[in-house]
Length: 260
Image 1 (cartoon, rainbow, N blue to C red):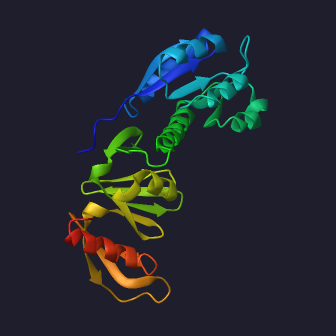
Image 2: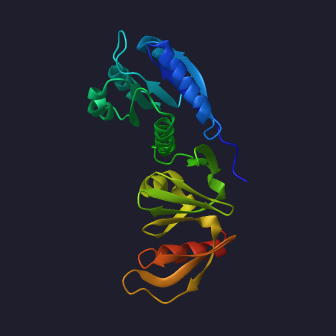
Image 3: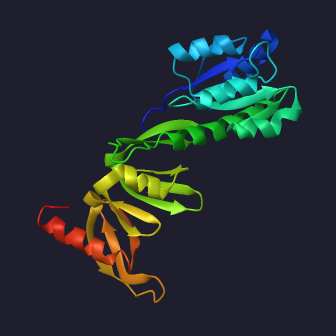
């Protein structure tokens, strides 16, 4: 069973009350599919900054043209935060779209905002948020991966992960009970996970404590060493590349002596 998802905290920033109310109504329609919570509203940038200084927020729905500080300028200020919220622009003005992506916005929605487009933008923002949750510092004690699953945010304990496999721009996160997709870098994850995982192939990391042995296969002349790894609790076999075979063999030898 997947862990209960944490609500996505949303701040609405728009100088027009009807526009804020419309976004609230649309978010309420989406809420059965995406566990979200509108934690606040702001009519201008100064109020938004004051709110953000006191309360954590995951996503900001941000108007562009507002009294005082422009929405684009507010987005630039948010980029300087240690964990900046993901910005989705909601505006009646199409001419700022290119500038919006210069400040790393997840989407640029034109008013009147449609529920379908808002849902798609939220999914994109959730994927962005999940990717940013991977620690950037070397040697970080990473305990969970934050993934999205059908519009939900799910915390997957690292201790439950059997392997991580890169496929196109996503990482397949495999536990004994389920499979998730994470938009992240395998190299970045390898650095954050440290010695808990071993690379068996250029596109795959396996938890050391999930390694139970190896099985001989027909060798791939171009890539493989003729071995696959056996995994605790899974019937899958993962290929071992020729380059990584010495490391896998060393890990297995160490496990027999209680070192792996």
